[in-house]
Length: 250
Image 1 (cartoon, helix red, strand yellow):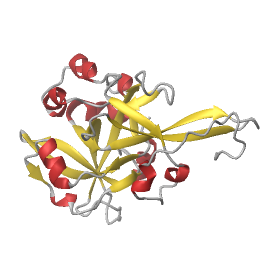
Image 2 (cartoon, rainbow, N blue to C red; image 1 turned 120 degrees about the horizontal axis):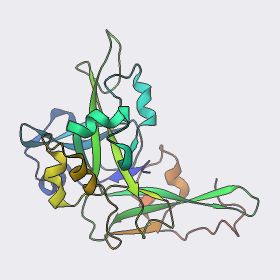
Image 3 (tube, rainbow, N blue to C red; image 1 turned 135 degrees about the vertical axis):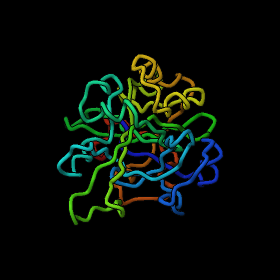
């Protein structure tokens, strides 16, 4: 899965790297974030009239038919294998696909400790060349009912997204069995084009990253709290061996 990530590249780098044509007013001037958590407004690259647009979407997809935006809390990830089948993602998969820029993401390796409790060691994963990642995403719009106030919907519409996941590659498999889909540049046009509706062709894009594309290292458990931010969160630490450390964090 993908439950936390970083976006530290400045906007101008994202615009250049993703060949963005237009920047939406929603992007603003937010600084780097080393601990992006669900419900945050994240950057997303979408297609609009054959132009790439950079905007912000709330992380946690809320389908158009949802009765409550809280449904998005359960929709931060979408399994690539069932996008065309699940009602929550089927419409977005057909015509509302996006790229979620990230500089890296976190995953937690779980193992039983000496007391029988599960211990988790966080890891930071990023590209070997330190270029931004293009995470495959889906987006949706949800109409805010009546005069209700929902954060992130100043015009009465809530725009949300989810990150697509697939099986882990050999690099990540020792840490977790799933990983976000990282799309390479040649796949961007096809993934973003709303007129592409060949399910088989789109599914073929949703494969694990090559084993040598990403690298990882253990990081502090401070990242476990979404309240913690700062570049120290991605600094390498010595991984705790849960089999021998009774004080490892849960």
